[in-house]
Image 1 (cartoon, one colour):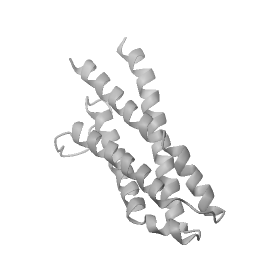
Image 2 (image 1 turned 90 degrees about the vertical axis):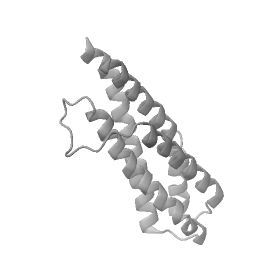
Image 3 (image 1 turned 60 degrees about the vertical axis):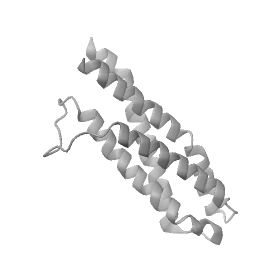
Image 4 (image 1 turned 45 degrees about the vertical axis):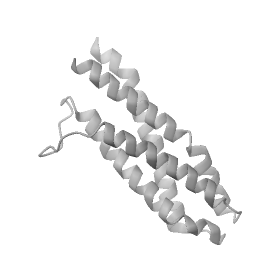
Amino acid sequence: MGSSTDADVRESFLELYRDLFSHVSYLETTIESMIHGQRVDRITLENHLTQMIASLSVSLKKHSVPKMPRRPRRNHPDYFRYEMLRVSKVIKGQLAVLLKTSFLVETGKEEDDYLQTLSDAIDNIAGAFQHVVRSNVLMPVMLN
């Protein structure tokens, strides 16, 4: 029973991060445009950020784990879920900050803090996506 639910959790996070990663190319284009002083469409940016936050919110609600007195060890059955929820909360927070401060893209100036947060969010999404892909590939091998 544990392995099938673990596999479902892994597959679900794979789908989530595949969806989030599909927005990364637009976010990278936004960074390039801001660096070169080009106009960024605020509404399109906000739509991407909102879709990403919504996906994360649904996943966080779906996979929430009961409060644990401390962080589970690597061999704990909920370790993967716990770690992915922790990373997802960080990314959701970064995206929320970007959404709340999206007015900065209309100034036409390079905003260092905004660019840094956007870059960090992209790096976190890419890293989490890579981790989930790796864990889904390795999991069947570990079960045999």
